[in-house]
Amino acid sequence: MVTALKRPSSIHEIRLEPVGTWHLFKFSETLQLRMESLLNREKADQLTLEEIAELDAISELDRIPIHMNAMLAAQYAISDETKRAIRERAKSLCEYRHSSERLSASRFTIDHIRHRSVTLRLSFSV
Image (cartoon, rainbow, N blue to C red; front, side, top):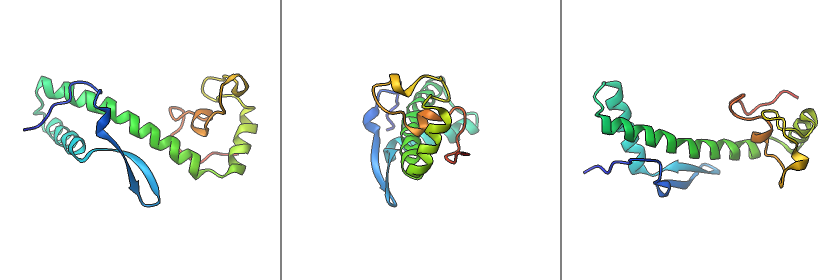
C-alpha cells in the first residue's frame, strides 16, 4: 500500500545524507520512489485527481532540499576571494531585491547576493 502525501507537511521525509565529500538534503527512498512513480504515471496521462494533488504537494516539498543544497554548494564552491569580489561588486546589496546587507541581522549568503531565480549558475563574473 502506498501512502499518499496530501500536502507538503511531511518534512520528516527529507534526510541529510552523505554524497561523496558533501552532506546533501534528499528525499527518503520511499518518497523518492513515490515521486518517480507519479511522474511516470503523469507522462502516461494516467494520474487521478488525487494523484495530481499529491504530485503537486511533493513537487512543492521538493523545492526545500533543492534550495538548501544550492545554498550549501554556493557557500562551499566559491572561494573567499570571489565572495569578497562579489560583495564589492554588489556594494553589499542584494542583487535581487537591492536591500542592504548592513541593515540585515546577518551577512547575506552568496545565494542571497545573486538570487537563484536570476541565475542558476554557481559561477559569477567578477
